[in-house]
Image (cartoon, rainbow, N blue to C red; front, side, top):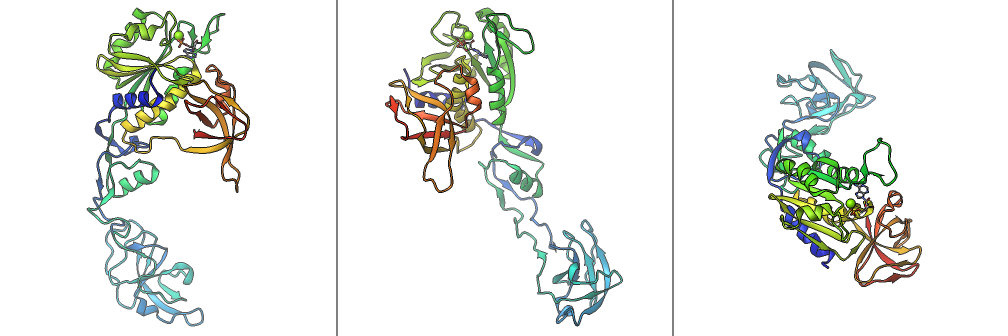
Length: 401
Ligand code: AMP
Ligand code: MG
Protein backbone atom coordinates (compact mmCIF):
# COMPACT_ATOMS: atom_id res chain seq x y z
CA UNK A 1 0.00 0.00 0.00
CA UNK A 2 1.15 3.53 -0.71
CA UNK A 3 0.19 6.61 1.29
CA UNK A 4 -2.24 9.32 0.20
CA UNK A 5 0.63 11.81 0.16
CA UNK A 6 2.82 9.56 -2.00
CA UNK A 7 0.08 9.07 -4.58
CA UNK A 8 -0.71 12.77 -4.57
CA UNK A 9 2.96 13.51 -5.27
CA UNK A 10 3.00 10.95 -8.10
CA UNK A 11 -0.10 12.41 -9.74
CA UNK A 12 1.25 15.94 -9.29
CA UNK A 13 4.51 14.92 -10.96
CA UNK A 14 2.64 13.21 -13.77
CA UNK A 15 0.65 16.33 -14.59
CA UNK A 16 3.76 18.54 -14.42
CA UNK A 17 3.41 22.21 -15.34
CA UNK A 18 1.28 23.25 -18.28
CA UNK A 19 3.10 25.22 -20.99
CA UNK A 20 2.34 28.89 -21.54
CA UNK A 21 -0.14 29.80 -24.26
CA UNK A 22 -1.58 33.13 -25.38
CA UNK A 23 -5.36 33.32 -25.09
CA UNK A 24 -7.91 36.09 -25.63
CA UNK A 25 -8.90 37.74 -22.35
CA UNK A 26 -12.38 36.22 -22.53
CA UNK A 27 -10.86 32.73 -22.32
CA UNK A 28 -8.53 33.50 -19.42
CA UNK A 29 -10.95 33.62 -16.48
CA UNK A 30 -9.72 31.46 -13.62
CA UNK A 31 -6.39 30.69 -15.29
CA UNK A 32 -2.96 31.74 -14.02
CA UNK A 33 -0.65 34.26 -15.71
CA UNK A 34 2.51 32.66 -17.06
CA UNK A 35 4.34 35.97 -17.64
CA UNK A 36 4.35 39.44 -16.08
CA UNK A 37 2.07 41.97 -17.77
CA UNK A 38 3.60 45.39 -18.34
CA UNK A 39 1.22 48.31 -18.74
CA UNK A 40 1.17 49.57 -22.33
CA UNK A 41 -0.36 52.83 -21.09
CA UNK A 42 -0.67 54.62 -17.79
CA UNK A 43 -3.86 54.24 -15.83
CA UNK A 44 -5.47 56.70 -16.01
CA UNK A 45 -3.82 57.49 -19.36
CA UNK A 46 -4.45 61.27 -18.90
CA UNK A 47 -5.51 63.69 -16.13
CA UNK A 48 -9.29 63.55 -16.05
CA UNK A 49 -12.23 64.73 -14.02
CA UNK A 50 -13.50 62.48 -11.22
CA UNK A 51 -16.88 64.23 -11.18
CA UNK A 52 -19.43 65.97 -13.38
CA UNK A 53 -18.91 69.71 -12.93
CA UNK A 54 -16.72 72.57 -14.13
CA UNK A 55 -13.01 72.62 -14.78
CA UNK A 56 -11.70 75.83 -13.25
CA UNK A 57 -8.64 77.78 -12.25
CA UNK A 58 -8.96 77.59 -8.48
CA UNK A 59 -7.96 81.25 -8.13
CA UNK A 60 -11.00 82.25 -10.25
CA UNK A 61 -13.45 80.77 -7.75
CA UNK A 62 -11.59 81.69 -4.54
CA UNK A 63 -14.01 82.85 -1.86
CA UNK A 64 -17.18 81.66 -3.65
CA UNK A 65 -19.96 80.69 -1.18
CA UNK A 66 -23.72 80.20 -1.21
CA UNK A 67 -24.11 83.85 -0.20
CA UNK A 68 -21.57 85.27 -2.61
CA UNK A 69 -21.37 83.06 -5.69
CA UNK A 70 -18.95 83.71 -8.54
CA UNK A 71 -20.35 83.87 -12.07
CA UNK A 72 -18.08 82.91 -14.97
CA UNK A 73 -18.57 82.28 -18.71
CA UNK A 74 -18.46 78.66 -19.92
CA UNK A 75 -16.03 78.17 -22.85
CA UNK A 76 -16.16 74.48 -23.70
CA UNK A 77 -18.30 71.44 -23.14
CA UNK A 78 -16.07 68.43 -22.46
CA UNK A 79 -17.87 65.09 -22.42
CA UNK A 80 -15.96 61.83 -21.82
CA UNK A 81 -14.27 60.72 -25.02
CA UNK A 82 -13.50 64.20 -26.36
CA UNK A 83 -10.02 64.12 -27.87
CA UNK A 84 -9.51 67.77 -28.98
CA UNK A 85 -9.77 69.69 -25.73
CA UNK A 86 -8.19 73.18 -26.04
CA UNK A 87 -6.50 74.94 -23.11
CA UNK A 88 -8.86 76.69 -20.67
CA UNK A 89 -9.39 80.33 -21.68
CA UNK A 90 -8.40 82.73 -18.90
CA UNK A 91 -11.38 84.01 -16.86
CA UNK A 92 -13.67 81.20 -18.03
CA UNK A 93 -14.56 77.65 -17.01
CA UNK A 94 -15.28 74.47 -19.03
CA UNK A 95 -18.25 72.23 -18.35
CA UNK A 96 -16.72 68.77 -17.84
CA UNK A 97 -18.01 65.24 -17.29
CA UNK A 98 -16.61 62.31 -15.30
CA UNK A 99 -13.72 60.70 -17.17
CA UNK A 100 -13.25 63.60 -19.60
CA UNK A 101 -9.72 64.97 -20.09
CA UNK A 102 -8.84 68.05 -18.03
CA UNK A 103 -8.07 71.11 -20.16
CA UNK A 104 -4.55 72.41 -19.59
CA UNK A 105 -4.67 75.50 -17.41
CA UNK A 106 -7.44 74.16 -15.17
CA UNK A 107 -6.23 72.94 -11.78
CA UNK A 108 -9.50 71.94 -10.11
CA UNK A 109 -13.09 70.81 -10.62
CA UNK A 110 -16.18 72.28 -8.98
CA UNK A 111 -18.88 69.62 -8.79
CA UNK A 112 -22.12 70.41 -10.60
CA UNK A 113 -24.09 70.18 -7.35
CA UNK A 114 -22.26 73.32 -6.09
CA UNK A 115 -23.32 75.35 -9.17
CA UNK A 116 -26.52 76.36 -10.97
CA UNK A 117 -25.56 74.00 -13.83
CA UNK A 118 -25.42 76.83 -16.41
CA UNK A 119 -24.15 76.24 -19.93
CA UNK A 120 -23.57 79.79 -21.28
CA UNK A 121 -22.40 81.06 -17.95
CA UNK A 122 -22.44 79.38 -14.57
CA UNK A 123 -22.97 80.52 -11.01
CA UNK A 124 -20.55 78.79 -8.67
CA UNK A 125 -21.35 78.56 -4.95
CA UNK A 126 -18.13 77.04 -3.59
CA UNK A 127 -14.43 77.52 -3.96
CA UNK A 128 -12.20 74.68 -5.21
CA UNK A 129 -9.02 73.41 -3.66
CA UNK A 130 -6.22 73.02 -6.22
CA UNK A 131 -6.25 69.41 -7.48
CA UNK A 132 -9.76 68.65 -6.23
CA UNK A 133 -11.65 65.97 -8.17
CA UNK A 134 -8.82 65.34 -10.62
CA UNK A 135 -7.60 61.80 -11.30
CA UNK A 136 -3.93 62.04 -12.16
CA UNK A 137 -2.18 60.26 -15.03
CA UNK A 138 -0.68 56.98 -13.81
CA UNK A 139 -1.93 57.22 -10.23
CA UNK A 140 -3.30 53.66 -10.55
CA UNK A 141 -0.58 52.19 -12.82
CA UNK A 142 2.39 53.88 -14.51
CA UNK A 143 3.05 52.98 -18.17
CA UNK A 144 5.81 50.38 -18.53
CA UNK A 145 5.55 49.05 -14.99
CA UNK A 146 4.41 45.53 -14.10
CA UNK A 147 0.65 45.69 -13.66
CA UNK A 148 0.17 41.95 -13.00
CA UNK A 149 2.86 39.47 -12.01
CA UNK A 150 3.32 35.93 -13.31
CA UNK A 151 1.43 33.56 -11.04
CA UNK A 152 -1.56 35.87 -10.63
CA UNK A 153 -4.91 34.09 -10.75
CA UNK A 154 -7.05 35.87 -13.33
CA UNK A 155 -10.34 36.83 -11.75
CA UNK A 156 -12.62 39.67 -12.81
CA UNK A 157 -10.47 42.47 -11.35
CA UNK A 158 -7.24 41.12 -12.85
CA UNK A 159 -8.81 40.68 -16.29
CA UNK A 160 -10.32 44.15 -16.12
CA UNK A 161 -6.93 45.64 -15.27
CA UNK A 162 -5.26 43.71 -18.11
CA UNK A 163 -7.69 45.25 -20.59
CA UNK A 164 -7.39 48.69 -19.00
CA UNK A 165 -3.62 48.67 -19.58
CA UNK A 166 -4.05 47.65 -23.20
CA UNK A 167 -3.90 43.85 -23.35
CA UNK A 168 -6.20 41.80 -25.58
CA UNK A 169 -4.43 38.46 -25.02
CA UNK A 170 -2.54 37.03 -22.06
CA UNK A 171 0.09 34.34 -21.60
CA UNK A 172 -1.46 31.78 -19.26
CA UNK A 173 -0.71 28.20 -18.31
CA UNK A 174 -2.67 26.34 -20.99
CA UNK A 175 -5.84 24.70 -19.73
CA UNK A 176 -5.53 20.97 -20.35
CA UNK A 177 -7.90 19.05 -22.60
CA UNK A 178 -9.18 16.28 -20.37
CA UNK A 179 -10.96 13.17 -21.57
CA UNK A 180 -13.21 11.69 -18.88
CA UNK A 181 -14.07 8.02 -19.36
CA UNK A 182 -16.64 6.03 -17.38
CA UNK A 183 -16.34 2.27 -17.55
CA UNK A 184 -18.94 -0.30 -16.58
CA UNK A 185 -21.19 -2.61 -18.58
CA UNK A 186 -23.95 -1.72 -16.09
CA UNK A 187 -23.93 1.97 -17.00
CA UNK A 188 -26.89 3.57 -18.78
CA UNK A 189 -27.36 7.23 -19.64
CA UNK A 190 -30.55 9.00 -18.57
CA UNK A 191 -33.25 9.10 -19.86
CA UNK A 192 -32.89 5.57 -21.28
CA UNK A 193 -34.99 3.15 -19.19
CA UNK A 194 -33.07 0.96 -16.74
CA UNK A 195 -33.26 -2.80 -16.80
CA UNK A 196 -32.74 -4.74 -13.60
CA UNK A 197 -28.98 -4.84 -12.99
CA UNK A 198 -28.24 -1.54 -14.69
CA UNK A 199 -27.58 1.87 -13.11
CA UNK A 200 -27.51 5.42 -14.34
CA UNK A 201 -24.06 6.80 -14.97
CA UNK A 202 -22.99 9.63 -12.65
CA UNK A 203 -19.19 9.69 -12.36
CA UNK A 204 -18.51 11.48 -15.62
CA UNK A 205 -21.03 14.18 -14.77
CA UNK A 206 -19.24 14.89 -11.49
CA UNK A 207 -15.76 14.80 -13.01
CA UNK A 208 -16.69 17.03 -15.92
CA UNK A 209 -18.16 19.61 -13.54
CA UNK A 210 -15.23 19.43 -11.13
CA UNK A 211 -12.61 19.65 -13.89
CA UNK A 212 -14.33 22.48 -15.72
CA UNK A 213 -14.50 24.45 -12.49
CA UNK A 214 -10.69 24.39 -12.40
CA UNK A 215 -10.42 25.67 -15.98
CA UNK A 216 -9.95 22.38 -17.87
CA UNK A 217 -11.53 21.82 -21.30
CA UNK A 218 -13.37 18.57 -20.87
CA UNK A 219 -14.91 15.89 -23.08
CA UNK A 220 -16.35 12.63 -21.90
CA UNK A 221 -17.04 9.08 -22.98
CA UNK A 222 -19.80 8.25 -20.58
CA UNK A 223 -20.20 4.52 -20.87
CA UNK A 224 -17.62 1.98 -22.01
CA UNK A 225 -18.39 -1.70 -21.51
CA UNK A 226 -16.08 -3.84 -19.36
CA UNK A 227 -14.34 -5.24 -22.40
CA UNK A 228 -10.68 -4.56 -23.06
CA UNK A 229 -11.03 -4.45 -26.84
CA UNK A 230 -14.01 -2.11 -26.71
CA UNK A 231 -12.24 0.09 -24.17
CA UNK A 232 -9.11 0.40 -26.33
CA UNK A 233 -11.13 0.99 -29.46
CA UNK A 234 -13.17 3.76 -27.80
CA UNK A 235 -10.28 5.61 -26.16
CA UNK A 236 -7.06 5.04 -28.10
CA UNK A 237 -8.11 7.08 -31.16
CA UNK A 238 -8.90 10.02 -28.87
CA UNK A 239 -5.57 10.09 -27.02
CA UNK A 240 -3.97 12.42 -29.56
CA UNK A 241 -6.48 15.14 -28.62
CA UNK A 242 -6.07 14.80 -24.85
CA UNK A 243 -3.56 16.21 -22.37
CA UNK A 244 -5.00 14.03 -19.63
CA UNK A 245 -7.32 11.03 -19.45
CA UNK A 246 -9.31 10.39 -16.26
CA UNK A 247 -11.11 7.07 -16.02
CA UNK A 248 -13.48 5.72 -13.39
CA UNK A 249 -14.20 2.11 -12.52
CA UNK A 250 -12.46 -1.10 -13.48
CA UNK A 251 -9.38 -0.81 -11.27
CA UNK A 252 -10.12 -2.90 -8.17
CA UNK A 253 -9.43 -6.52 -7.30
CA UNK A 254 -12.31 -8.38 -8.98
CA UNK A 255 -12.61 -9.81 -12.44
CA UNK A 256 -13.72 -7.64 -15.39
CA UNK A 257 -11.42 -4.79 -14.27
CA UNK A 258 -11.30 -3.30 -17.72
CA UNK A 259 -9.03 -0.32 -17.06
CA UNK A 260 -6.53 -2.39 -15.14
CA UNK A 261 -6.61 -5.16 -17.75
CA UNK A 262 -6.20 -2.77 -20.67
CA UNK A 263 -3.49 -0.55 -19.20
CA UNK A 264 -1.34 -2.84 -17.07
CA UNK A 265 1.95 -3.10 -18.91
CA UNK A 266 0.99 -0.19 -21.16
CA UNK A 267 2.58 2.46 -18.93
CA UNK A 268 0.05 2.73 -16.11
CA UNK A 269 0.80 1.54 -12.57
CA UNK A 270 -1.99 0.33 -10.32
CA UNK A 271 -1.70 0.48 -6.56
CA UNK A 272 -3.66 0.44 -3.36
CA UNK A 273 -3.65 3.74 -1.53
CA UNK A 274 -4.11 3.74 2.24
CA UNK A 275 -7.36 5.65 2.25
CA UNK A 276 -11.08 5.15 2.59
CA UNK A 277 -12.91 5.55 0.31
CA UNK A 278 -10.84 5.39 -2.85
CA UNK A 279 -8.24 2.69 -2.20
CA UNK A 280 -7.62 1.35 -5.72
CA UNK A 281 -5.84 3.98 -7.79
CA UNK A 282 -3.62 4.12 -10.81
CA UNK A 283 -1.66 6.57 -12.89
CA UNK A 284 0.89 6.67 -15.66
CA UNK A 285 1.11 7.34 -19.38
CA UNK A 286 -0.72 5.68 -22.24
CA UNK A 287 0.90 6.42 -25.60
CA UNK A 288 2.58 9.29 -23.78
CA UNK A 289 -0.64 10.83 -22.48
CA UNK A 290 -1.03 11.14 -18.70
CA UNK A 291 -3.76 8.87 -17.37
CA UNK A 292 -5.26 8.92 -13.88
CA UNK A 293 -7.51 5.96 -13.12
CA UNK A 294 -10.06 6.36 -10.32
CA UNK A 295 -12.19 3.68 -8.70
CA UNK A 296 -15.84 3.38 -9.69
CA UNK A 297 -17.92 4.22 -6.67
CA UNK A 298 -19.19 7.78 -6.98
CA UNK A 299 -18.08 8.93 -3.52
CA UNK A 300 -14.63 7.41 -4.15
CA UNK A 301 -14.47 9.38 -7.38
CA UNK A 302 -15.15 12.70 -5.72
CA UNK A 303 -12.87 11.99 -2.77
CA UNK A 304 -10.09 10.89 -5.15
CA UNK A 305 -10.62 14.06 -7.12
CA UNK A 306 -10.18 16.10 -3.94
CA UNK A 307 -7.19 14.12 -2.72
CA UNK A 308 -5.22 13.82 -5.97
CA UNK A 309 -6.58 15.42 -9.10
CA UNK A 310 -7.60 18.79 -7.75
CA UNK A 311 -4.23 19.67 -6.18
CA UNK A 312 -2.27 18.17 -9.10
CA UNK A 313 -4.29 20.01 -11.73
CA UNK A 314 -4.15 23.30 -9.84
CA UNK A 315 -0.39 22.96 -9.50
CA UNK A 316 -0.06 22.16 -13.22
CA UNK A 317 -2.00 25.33 -14.00
CA UNK A 318 0.42 27.44 -11.98
CA UNK A 319 -1.66 27.88 -8.82
CA UNK A 320 0.37 28.03 -5.62
CA UNK A 321 -2.50 27.59 -3.17
CA UNK A 322 -3.63 24.09 -4.15
CA UNK A 323 -5.00 22.91 -0.80
CA UNK A 324 -8.53 23.35 0.43
CA UNK A 325 -8.82 25.43 3.57
CA UNK A 326 -8.34 23.25 6.67
CA UNK A 327 -10.05 23.98 9.98
CA UNK A 328 -10.38 22.19 13.28
CA UNK A 329 -13.89 21.34 14.47
CA UNK A 330 -15.57 19.42 17.28
CA UNK A 331 -17.40 16.27 16.20
CA UNK A 332 -21.11 16.06 17.00
CA UNK A 333 -20.97 12.26 17.20
CA UNK A 334 -18.35 9.55 17.57
CA UNK A 335 -16.75 8.05 14.44
CA UNK A 336 -14.70 4.97 13.65
CA UNK A 337 -11.97 4.71 11.07
CA UNK A 338 -10.03 1.75 9.65
CA UNK A 339 -6.54 1.31 11.07
CA UNK A 340 -3.76 2.33 8.75
CA UNK A 341 -6.00 4.26 6.34
CA UNK A 342 -6.78 7.93 6.04
CA UNK A 343 -10.54 8.23 6.14
CA UNK A 344 -12.44 11.00 4.42
CA UNK A 345 -15.99 11.31 5.74
CA UNK A 346 -18.59 13.67 4.36
CA UNK A 347 -19.56 16.29 6.92
CA UNK A 348 -21.39 19.52 7.56
CA UNK A 349 -19.36 22.22 9.24
CA UNK A 350 -20.80 25.20 11.07
CA UNK A 351 -19.09 27.96 12.96
CA UNK A 352 -21.05 30.37 15.10
CA UNK A 353 -19.78 33.77 16.03
CA UNK A 354 -17.84 33.77 19.27
CA UNK A 355 -16.88 30.08 19.00
CA UNK A 356 -13.17 29.29 18.92
CA UNK A 357 -13.62 26.10 16.89
CA UNK A 358 -16.54 25.13 14.70
CA UNK A 359 -18.69 22.04 14.91
CA UNK A 360 -18.88 19.24 12.34
CA UNK A 361 -21.42 16.47 11.96
CA UNK A 362 -21.05 13.50 9.61
CA UNK A 363 -23.43 13.23 6.67
CA UNK A 364 -24.10 9.60 5.77
CA UNK A 365 -21.99 6.58 6.64
CA UNK A 366 -18.60 5.59 5.28
CA UNK A 367 -20.11 3.70 2.29
CA UNK A 368 -18.62 4.92 -0.98
CA UNK A 369 -21.92 4.49 -2.83
CA UNK A 370 -23.78 7.02 -0.64
CA UNK A 371 -23.86 9.93 -3.05
CA UNK A 372 -26.99 11.60 -1.69
CA UNK A 373 -25.33 12.32 1.65
CA UNK A 374 -22.42 13.95 -0.21
CA UNK A 375 -24.89 16.49 -1.56
CA UNK A 376 -25.70 17.51 2.01
CA UNK A 377 -22.04 17.93 2.93
CA UNK A 378 -19.92 21.07 2.83
CA UNK A 379 -16.67 19.49 4.00
CA UNK A 380 -14.66 16.32 4.33
CA UNK A 381 -13.77 15.13 7.83
CA UNK A 382 -10.22 13.76 7.69
CA UNK A 383 -9.35 11.00 10.15
CA UNK A 384 -5.62 10.24 10.02
CA UNK A 385 -4.11 6.80 9.40
CA UNK A 386 -3.32 6.13 13.07
CA UNK A 387 -6.80 7.03 14.33
CA UNK A 388 -9.38 4.28 14.79
CA UNK A 389 -12.00 6.09 16.84
CA UNK A 390 -12.89 9.65 17.67
CA UNK A 391 -15.32 10.40 20.48
CA UNK A 392 -18.15 12.89 20.31
CA UNK A 393 -16.86 16.37 21.08
CA UNK A 394 -13.27 15.65 20.07
CA UNK A 395 -11.48 17.89 17.61
CA UNK A 396 -10.97 16.70 14.04
CA UNK A 397 -9.44 18.15 10.89
CA UNK A 398 -11.93 19.36 8.31
CA UNK A 399 -11.37 20.22 4.65
CA UNK A 400 -13.84 22.88 3.56
CA UNK A 401 -15.23 22.16 0.10
P1 AMP B 1 -15.89 -0.70 -10.17
O1 AMP B 1 -14.76 0.07 -9.56
O2 AMP B 1 -15.90 -0.67 -11.64
O3 AMP B 1 -15.94 -2.07 -9.61
O4 AMP B 1 -17.21 0.04 -9.69
C1 AMP B 1 -17.54 0.14 -8.33
C2 AMP B 1 -18.98 0.53 -8.15
O5 AMP B 1 -19.17 1.83 -8.70
C3 AMP B 1 -19.97 -0.38 -8.83
O6 AMP B 1 -21.10 -0.50 -7.98
C4 AMP B 1 -20.32 0.39 -10.10
O7 AMP B 1 -21.59 0.06 -10.58
C5 AMP B 1 -20.23 1.82 -9.64
N1 AMP B 1 -19.89 2.68 -10.76
C6 AMP B 1 -18.84 2.54 -11.58
N2 AMP B 1 -18.81 3.49 -12.51
C7 AMP B 1 -19.87 4.28 -12.28
C8 AMP B 1 -20.38 5.45 -12.92
N3 AMP B 1 -19.77 5.98 -13.97
N4 AMP B 1 -21.51 6.01 -12.41
C9 AMP B 1 -22.10 5.46 -11.33
N5 AMP B 1 -21.67 4.38 -10.68
C10 AMP B 1 -20.57 3.78 -11.15
MG1 MG C 1 -16.88 -1.48 -13.08
